[in-house]
Image (cartoon, helix red, strand yellow):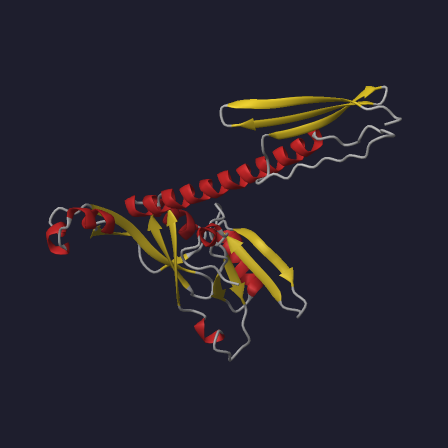
Length: 263
């Protein structure tokens, strides 16, 4: 059963980009290229039941995953080898990365270039009500340094600078990641609190010959302010403690029952 677009629960479900497929002629050779030339890391490497090998690599920060797929010759995927992947990598210093990778033997299509682009955030344009032409007259500009490089199969990738726009994207990505991490920790702490509270309730019941009794506490959420306990006062006497924390204060009742075995 699916959730409607207005269902708030549907917006809280975990969803992220899993991997981008890159078609290569030889997985092992491509693996060595990404590890040795670009400094990537192995994200996944295993032989599946069908006998095929699945390999995935990721850049040092692990924010993206490239699945290195070795298709069958003469297949449609095989004909995609050696083309533009439309994958864009961002780095703080394009010229420095260019020099480092080029020294390792990475082939670039051209030296890093500077491209100035005017931009106007859609939200800001909607607030001012300006047209796109009038907004362009005083819109901010960011300079994007970019180049393109090839892997060992001549698949091409873009390499761009960590400029204002990509900083905004990265800030949003980190804010989302921090929000998810905060929600995960809150859920974990609630579960710990639930377990601690469950252990505070009576684990064993004092034995009485003249009374059968039981207690239970059902919280509307994982934790709550309700509490109860049974106290063995000896001589067939039982103390019943009920606590309720609500709003501004705590209401507690202590009921004492003098229960004789012959009643």
